[in-house]
Amino acid sequence: MMHDTETIWKPEYSVGVAEIDAQHRYLFELWHLLDSIKGQKQNRNSCRQAMLSLLDYIDLHFTTEEPYYREHPRFTDHQQVHREFVRRVREFEQDLENDRLDIQAMTDFLRTWLIDHIVNTDIRYFKDMEKIRAGGQS
Image 1 (tube, rainbow, N blue to C red):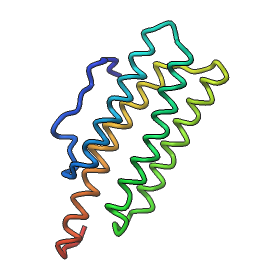
Image 2 (image 1 turned 90 degrees about the horizontal axis):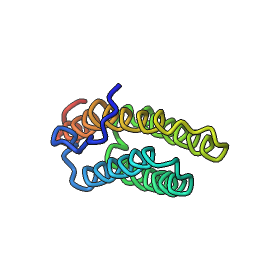
Image 3 (image 1 turned 180 degrees about the vertical axis):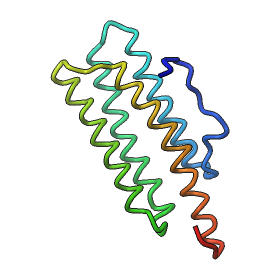
Image 4 (image 1 turned 45 degrees about the vertical axis):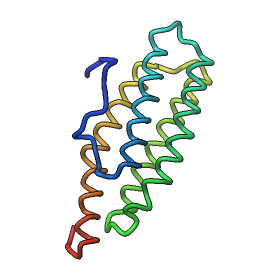
């Protein structure tokens, strides 16, 4: 697994909707923030604040994103993937509260999940919705 701290937004991560792309970019910024904390002496308060910011923003993002593809035939599957992601991030939050957080494992998970989910799921859903709205099939 790559452990670089320079994962940046790339044009190929675009779903073609400016509002969602901006939110995805901000999720990467929050990942960078958490990733930068791991280099410090595990500053628990900084980590807690960053995780709370991430959880708040994830909620905002999913609430914004999901209506874009509510009519997608597999909408509930995608929604369930989002819920599972939130559950996993909350587990990391609990680990932090119980002094068991492996911050490297958390930042690796976040980085991998964000890229994989955007590239392999979100982009496909948004393209499918373009076809559906144009009268085609997904």
